[in-house]
Image 1: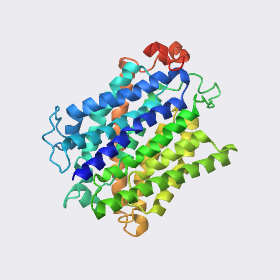
Image 2: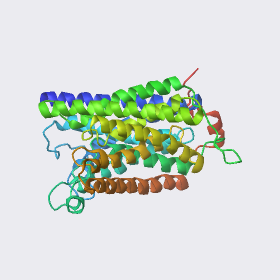
Image 3: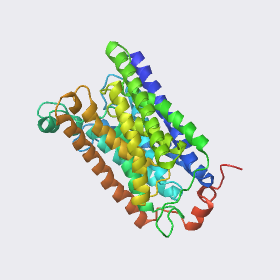
Image 4: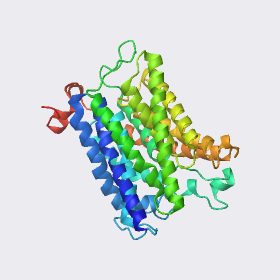
Length: 410
């Protein structure tokens, strides 16, 4: 049990290390005049999320209840599990912070910092814990007891091992709605409606951020086994390490190839997002798919990503500076559904029928509808009640000086 606890805490450290990965990735993909703002928001996500999840969110996610558990008000004695409750709380806190951080990049360069604090708090306190209670918290979507709704309807419960749906698709859906409510950055679309590229100021920072995220994912996915001792656990975490890495590598190669074919040159920025797409896509089924299945999931996510980014940008005219809605939203949904196809234990492609795919489809639908409904109420409520976007002059000159009184580069 001590070794299992150490493994869980080491995994939590790796997932926490994803916070600077997101910060560097988002900063690199945006303009230098907004760097302080981006970095500050990533710190706020973790600081505020840690406090809110400790005081209330942990109980709402893992406490007793139907739709949602009871807030714990800082009291951890309600939780009864094998692992130390303080360690488990930390492990779940870093996942909560990740979901909130995803939204930051899609709404970058034009959001009031004060309003960002508000919606970051709502995500950490309400949106994430509720759907987390339905799934990892022992709620109805993952209830495998005989006679439960999922077992009666599909024969299997919803499965999301490390959060393609629970963490990433929720963040991606919220990112899409947030970016839509803000409207595009100034100069993003011309009078003819054509999209204009607004290059980020440092692909070096973005690339370093993706390397850090790739490393952090080895805590995100294998760490979700929550144990390392014994033959079953050591084989499980080793398998998950492999499937996680293979999917990321395959997705990156696929995105590079597609961008090379479509644009005439292999795009680094697109490839970086492709790697993340593969990591997001494998997260739901990393424990159940074979290594070959992981490569297939990565390839599919890497290809779909390019067309998803193009469609959201050029057709829907939704300005997402870092592609978060495609990477986390589209590929999170896709990865969850492909678990129902590629799972070696229950998947359709392995002769186990349609029940598992149905459970995955139903689960991701419920989770995304919850995120979308909350997102519309949250972002449009803030927009019309107080204003979500900064003034044009602040956007033109940069949020750093006006919102924070300092610059990142001097």
